Image 1 (cartoon, one colour):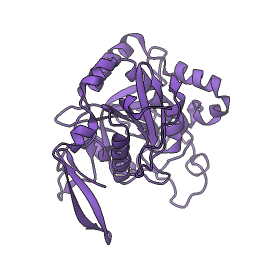
Image 2 (tube, rainbow, N blue to C red):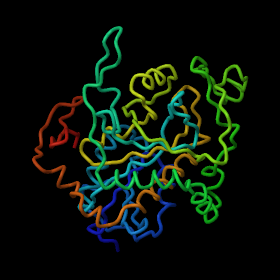
Image 3 (cartoon, helix red, strand yellow):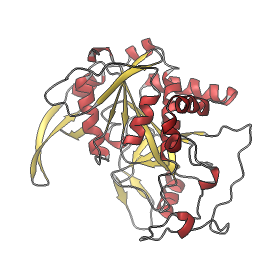
Amino acid sequence: MSNPEDYTVGWISAVTTEYVAAQQLLDEKHEDPPRLSARTKNSYTVGKVGKHNVVITNLPVGGYGTTSAALVAEEMMQSFPNIRIVLMVGIGGGVPSRSHDIRLGDIVVSIPGNGKGGVIQYDFGKTIQDQEFKPTGFLSQPPTSLLTALGKLQAEYEVEGHTLDQTIDAVLEKKPRLRVKYGRPDPSTDRLYQSHVVHPVNGDLSCDSNCGDDLELLVSRRPRTDMEDNPAIHYGLIASANQLMKDALARDKFAAQMDVLCFEMEAAGLMNNFPCLVIRGICDYADSHKNKVWQGYAAMTAAAYAKDLLNKIAPWQVEQEAKIVNVFNEGSHNTHIEFNGENRGFQVGPRGMYMK
């Protein structure tokens, strides 16, 4: 039976599709851990990626958003007290622009820059008439060991290219029943509509029927060449909030103001309390034309990238990072406030406050 003290890497998924993809990228799967504590509500999958012992958990079904992510992460740290680094791996909405040729199946990785930690909470700020949205704070950056490995992997990909599709194909060879949902969809289903084109609110039909493939409605993009990575990897700012972005005009506004590359719903709940790198496979364009066709493949590309990244980190580098549970608990204290008519516990630590 697995010993919870042996695991140093945490891997958090938000939805079942991401959780399935993560499990397929383990090099070894260990026996389930014993009952961890009376408070434990998370389910865990434990195993090995390269030389690292990894624990994977998933948010409760229907439990999306920043608060849910924070609660799940806090419980993971208490149950596996030697975790030093955390990866938030899954799917997100891409933000294509003239500067960033983001397409479905591509990967966006959060990296710090321009005074930002890699993730911005875009529903936490202020809007002033006739002025840009003003964020009132930025979230912490990932731990040094992850950023060092990321730079090494980025350089290797630039010289040699990556083998993410080969990694995914190897998984699908072993688990052929996953091929329909998790294999790469037909490229013709990757349509980027002009920002003013809105999917009918009550349209039950797909974009094939409701929006069509009229070239005047679509953004023209050249095919990628054999000398380009496909899927491509993009590094930059990820926007996170407790709301789903489905507005192409708002998407483009954030892209212009803050150079955001991706929208998602969980990372802001982690960054200030748990040193974390966010890796997102792009499954839609954060507009009204959402569908699930690319979700499985996007989850696989993100998980395959996370595996490559972990293989660039030596175990001793992870051991040099502080135990996250210690970082979180240091100087923290409990308080209670009224929340939706219910007396809820909060813990306030050196990196912020979250709901207990």
